[in-house]
Image (cartoon, rainbow, N blue to C red; front, side, top):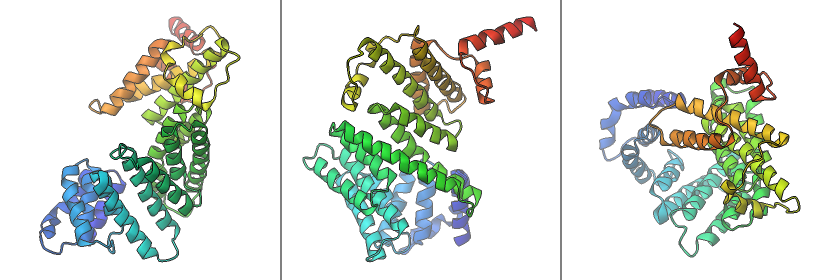
Length: 378
């Protein structure tokens, strides 16, 4: 059984949930007794979650928490995962129990891993308060209390906590403070990414896995930076995403949309040179983005738009070769095509190939003309 669990874990590390399930399935009957193996319960829960079978993962998570209420064998993860799945007040209680187990195991001194677990638990609770329980009268005060705990425990060095702080500040319309939190969050994410990449003592698979775990937090951060007008920070975050996953679909979309927004802001400032754009006004500006007609005759604006066209065309091309049934992929393709229709359409695939090869193309249309001329001559 121990060997099968290890093999399943290795298969999950390779993103092969079907293979992981096949290793565990011969031991499924072992879970039917009064005292099932908790490690096996958790392994089944993890593989089913990874395979998108929440209905099958759920009973294993519940049983795992029941059999090992102190988390002595599987730690806090089952409580955190089940709490996120359940949500609401029950989810808060489950995550709180997971945090309590970590604190009890740690005693007076938390190590780095325990700090990360507790902070992640606190942030999961905040997410529930901001979604499932957002209409409760104490929602805001609970979020404030929890984020302060997360920042205190992490000594203000948690990129995730600072990103969540920024999200809370947006909901409170404290946009300048949100900008400060997001900027600091990116700085910490960047340091972590560099530290992981420079870790020569760990296997390549481990480093790849550690970097992959940064993708979703970085994508979330980039989206929130766009909300408050931190476009330059957004582009830095997207650059970090591309270092990890060169063909990340959402990363390309966010890059293109950030350039699009920069062009919109530039056009607006040309027409309103005396108006100072602050985070507060940027947030309102975003609500009226379609009303701003781009000045494509302006050289600076046009250069920015070309960058947007490139990134958004990559979004469409990568998306079209992805899973056609994926709703998120289809939304990104649709969004990219909508913007492209406004800014000059898709870039020719020949140009994209040149960009992929690292060639500098200052003017897309001029280079496209050159390519077409070459074809006519040949």
